Length: 257
Length: 257
Ligand SMILES: Nc1ncnc2c1ncn2[C@@H]1O[C@H](COP(=O)(O)OP(=O)(O)OP(=O)(O)O)[C@@H](O)[C@H]1O
Ligand SMILES: [Mg+2]
Image 1 (spheres, each protein chain N blue to C red):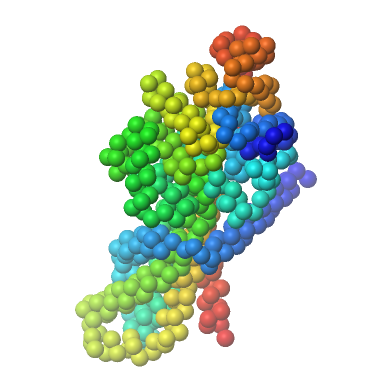
Image 2 (cartoon, rainbow over the protein chains, first blue to last red):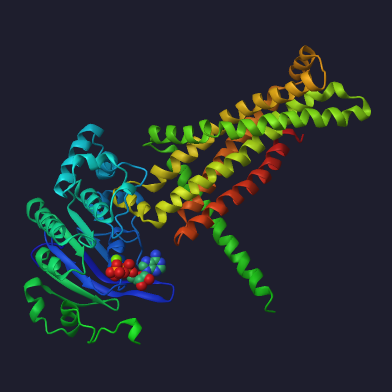
């Protein structure tokens, strides 16, 4: 192995009550790599990201960020580790008591102690990058459409130019053109800022465009991990069914029990 | 034997909740005394708790003072002790009714609002978003509210004391026909500093309890709108009960010699 992986999951297990969601996830994600997780709805993709961020605690297994075990870390140390991260939540999770620009600038002001005026300029710049004007910055999140909220969430995730960025379904709810703008933005974050990106998506077009490697999550396990270029020749029935969107195959939907 | 099971389950859940509350309280207090502190956020909460509660608390206080004068006048007339009305009004208000009634009013107004706001932030993942932006929710959400509750409620109660005594004076002087100068004189004459101070100390404790219960129930709410509603109810009920209980304990500590 040439260099230490940026993120390393070793046999991670997570369950809610009797329901097992993650059943032994093991994967290495290299620095400056764009990694995409695909998989059916409710298979635990969002839970995986939350475990890495420490928002949920896995019952078993180790999670290393830059070689440092983050499971059960003390709050103060975790805060230091979290400074490296940016996260776009599936539901955007904007602070509804703050204006849009304050949302985007939040990490800069609170986490990096930047002064408000400078942070605002930076926030406006990031809003432009996701296709929103400075006037949107003065609105409150409740006044935005779903797709606009998603883009503000994206701007907030990249505002501090973090080393590691998680995107939970960055293009859902966007029109195809805007979705492609966002894809380009994610690629740019990885290429220009050298960030490590982990994205979750159901949109195969987007997945192919933004990822270097992909993994498929099914029943709490990664059933396939490989380079994006090889996804069509994976010979994996799960992957084949998923990327072609077929109802018939080894993945059984609950309703067809 | 089956009827014992619910009792045991109730007892266990009671212990679990108490432990969780004590733990929450400990973490919250440690964040209240450790820098960084956010003066802007504390000020915003103080305005919310103090200034915007003034009408409600003022109305409560003035009518309480009025009714107190009326009741003690008619009651004391039975053994010709009408001279004690002014003293009874001022002592009852400063020692008991000011802090308790203001506490209960603020619990309904502010405790509920805190639980609803933090609860909504919890269920819409805004609390998680805060964590990923390297900001501790205890530091940013809980500590400012607790500090503000602790220092604002005494101020509010001092105002309520004055308004309540004034209400008693108005009824005494203009309805019951006491000489205004004599009434005011006997208001002052028997009032001891401890009467007022004990009331203000109670107010501080109640302010702390209201903010603590609002934050605690909001922070631990789960589910959607229903969970937030439940958290709001729990916050108001538990802080009201704690206010009444602690009121007795504090009274005993101050005056039971
Ligand atoms: N806080 C929680 N409490 C209990 N169960 C949970 C919780 N969060 C997630 N789950 C369960 O974990 C499973 C995986 O959830 P997760 O949100 O990771 O799905 P997902 O793969 O992101 O799906 P989608 O593509 O629809 O977003 C779901 O079945 C869900 O019921
Ligand atoms: Mg998800």
